Length: 262
Image 1: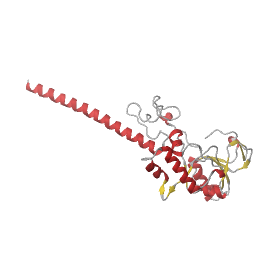
Image 2: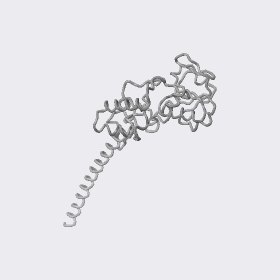
Image 3: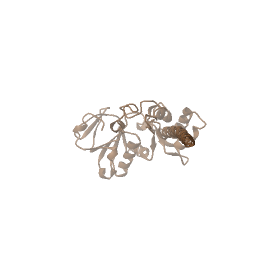
Image 4: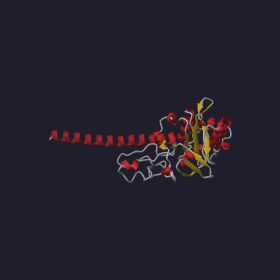
């Protein structure tokens, strides 16, 4: 749970996105959804579909992309384009396509980052949001976009712009903390923040056969890169061990022959 001023004083229900099951229980309520990533967008849409009134906190800029273009996944098209085009150009084409499909989203309080979606994912680990219908609800006003939170009170939230909202419940779509250091009793491979100490692309291998996949903050492409390097390393280790085993077997066989002849 994030530490937000006054949250402990709030009398309504407060849950994390990981505990959210359905918007049915929130029917007719005013809900504050904290976070505008994929989880926040999808939760807000589900709340709308169950006749709740969500307000979604958007604290920073965010890339919102259509899930499909011309019937193809936008990420599938991006991967295809990156075989021939530089990343910056793929980013530019994705943003142009998004603007043609989704229109100008900044007038709804959804400012785009200056960095392209793929570059942002590769450098900051921030995943673009894929729109599955929430943007339509934002346009219609069924989902209200609000700025950052200043503090909570008994049944209200005060925003950084001074506006106060009456709310019944809060859903925290604020991401997750990696708990690797809590169960992996090893201090050389992972840092306290739950990521490998070595930067990409060297954070996939630890000591004594310990490997890590998917900690690159680069999505499926980063996980794929890790998996390929690990498979190659395991193959190399197996070859080396097999070669040493054959040498030991051959040497033993020769000693046995020598002893039998004497």
